[in-house]
Image (cartoon, rainbow, N blue to C red):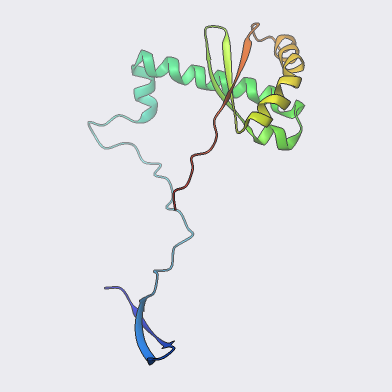
Length: 141
């Protein structure tokens, strides 16, 4: 049962009225500790599923490759610009970088030759880098 608090409110012309307001429950800032135990019998862990399923395994490898390439390139960019870029999938010789706005895409286009050279000298295959604007979803009030 929620805790109710009373508040004395004044309304011009009617005098004082009593109102009841719900007090919000205090939110705990502590997160539960992740479970380190083995999955229950008959259930496989996520790692086991990734190893068993070829599609999930390939997806995991693409995600790791994208993260490794981004880790190589992010230090070359100004910090504010690097924060506005997220690595995306690398499929068929095209690597997609998700950017937060058209302005970030325009600025990042200026750095593309440098980024491609760095990937090439680091031993990654020659890739076409595609920029895709993904603006954050609008909050409906």
